[in-house]
Length: 248
Image (cartoon, rainbow, N blue to C red; front, side, top):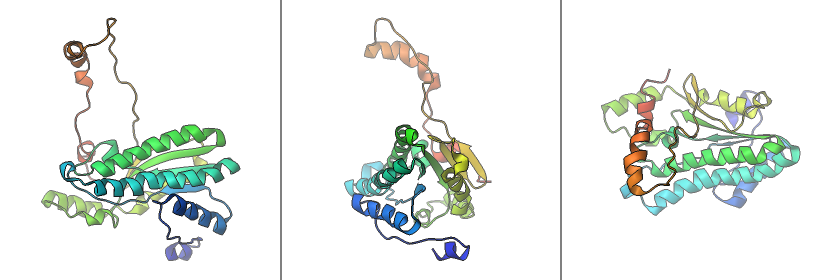
């Protein structure tokens, strides 16, 4: 808050949690009470409980889903009432390539982050009639949250050293743009940011189809569907496989 004020901006601090439906309402009300209206919600709350899936506990799952996915819903739901009445507003959600592509030891995190994409897309559809937009950003940045993950080997340590050069400030310009009227025609999109690169990410659409007039049986799937579609299957990849180069 002090940094914002030093640069001439206005800011207030609220310590309520996004996890509770009513406490999320108080966050939105705090903004309205202090600034008179609300024009954008940036869903950026997040935690990590990284663990390989067969060792993941229910608490590991619930903690991440509650903060990231339920928290995003809570904030959006309360802001939506104001956006609808004023017939304007923008949601900017932080997703992750852990959900869009895949990551080791992040089943809870990846599920929450991909769930946020579904949340954003359907909010965009529902609230288009009220001139309300909803978009996602998959950011890369060195933060207090990512700092909590120790490197496992020299390669990971080098990657961490490189990532430390990428700050949240590299992601902020796109978030501000999406919040602004300059992005009035942008909704339902998923972007990724890696330092000075901005990517528009693909969204699920049919790639190929195969028809069988007699219908399908498990054997027919094995004999006809599999050979027809197999060359189009997506490989099992992680973020580093899709983005093998250092952030530039």
